[in-house]
Image (spheres, rainbow, N blue to C red):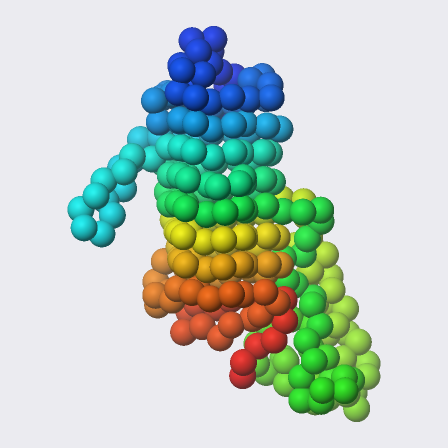
Length: 251
């Protein structure tokens, strides 16, 4: 989001948005960065508190198709949208999310946070023994060596309790009512994204469902697309890119 100040919409800007097919429960709850270009916001319904960044960038898609940043055909509820982001064709709504700069979100069903979420942190996963007793609490930062200690050093109960307490404390600090989608994120042709944090430079494409998790990435990460049904999973990723989701990890 631009560091410039957010302001309320002017009456003529509201009139332009309404001409573009936009509606709002209360226009007073909508704030925008300056300069605001209403022509890049079409067929959008706003509810709750919404903040919109600048729309000054054009995306070039594979095949040479160009699309300008903006919001088209969507419903936004309690959202903050960063600068130069494109949100297009959201079939249901986006609710309770902070979305970063230079994101490309197109053809998704629904993106929302429901209640308080720790985004996949401190979810216990049964390993080694299907009858239980060696559960490993996964979290954003879990390493193979730490998982090994938690699963196999049950003869050191003080150590295990201390590690579990540290992970629980970390998860508590990640818990909140709002989700985050970082900068330069692409979410394309995706179904449901629920209670999920998506870090900078991640790409989610042709995914049916992301539920209760954290997707990690950064600019130099190897390309990896999430292409299948994901619910309660932590997928192994190539070096420099990992996904933490509630459930199992392939070791």
